[in-house]
Length: 183
Image (cartoon, rainbow, N blue to C red; front, top):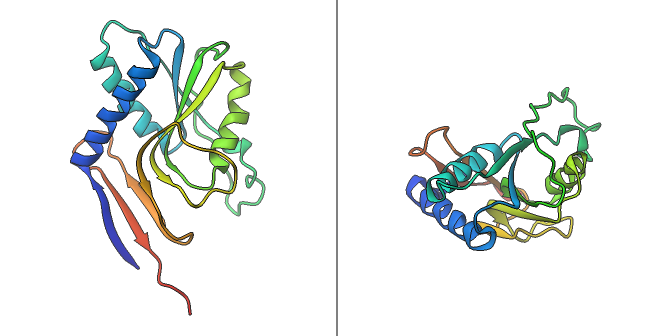
């Protein structure tokens, strides 16, 4: 197994800042928008983006929530371990809102499909956009595409992308873990 650092803390910070500025360009003051992080790994990124947006737009109120998709996944009954859901933290409806779903890595698209299903419990959004830190472009099983992408990675199916975001910025890292080729 071989590991390669794709992004260090400084690069991740720059990417988050760029993504926030893109969001502001498309959502203005966020009066008709909401940010929703996907449990479990998308929430650290979504919290960072939400905090940075509050710094950049101090007079705006930005709706923020965290969505658990555990029971909406198509592999939920196939898992060997018991599924332990995370807490849902959405105290608003998404009816007539522009929703930005945030996750760390877009891989097959199945997590996002589950998120779209789960989101319907909170109303019908006008628009749903997807923001990801890492887009594994050539691994899609479903026709799902990121609206905002921090970094594109072309890797083999058996490789892993490890996103290590700390609760406080500074020791963050994204690594590509390459599995040995089988003969």
